[in-house]
Length: 269
Image (cartoon, rainbow, N blue to C red; front, side, top):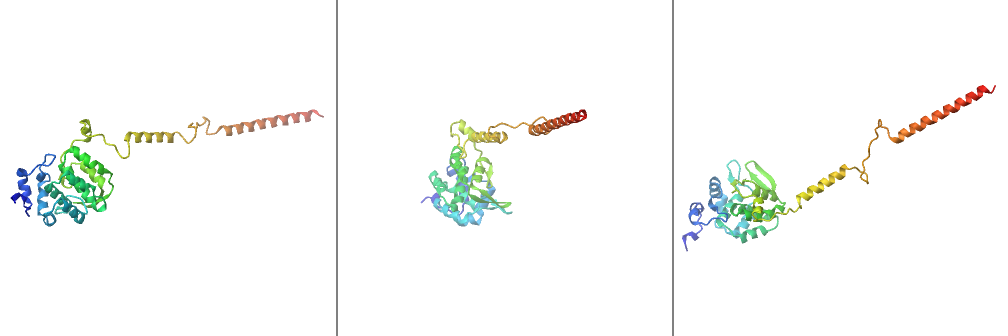
């Protein structure tokens, strides 16, 4: 058996000899140096990595995630202790699983495998090319399950789709600087990716429908769509003016009749 086939307890060998003897990741980066040096040193020296990550393979990763990972993050606390999440991500960098294994990780359903899904997405973002990253991660934006995130400020609540969006848009996630990808519209112009169709539909069509609804609301409540106009009078409507006019007409006629009667009475004697 060759010396390289042994699994040594000292994981620093992975850091020392990877640059000269190991293969590069599909995106051309060295897996041993993807994470920052300070984070790598904390990972290989922590108790969880030495106890739970020694001698594991791709199948054991699933058990470790289900048993020990209940939050995401890089380092936490005042002493910046590495999380089990980042320790297992570093172990995946050492194992370098194939695309078929990563696809099986993502296919695991159920609530207890949601951290395996985000761990796989984090590893894909670190090691795959930009075209593959979009194709792998964009379908995960429909996952709305809750996640716990632990950092220096404490534990907060987040969601799977929010974490995936951070991987696609931000430059630093889980105490790890992400390599800069080309934007999606650039890959579409190069015909490397097809335009993405949102589950909500076309955004332009949705905006046009909202504008049409607002125009209908502003048009009034009349069925024929006509808008009532106010009379230029001093706040009085036409019916009220008609009543006043009729009243004035009746008073004038009564006055004329009383005058004629008074004249007839004066002439009679």
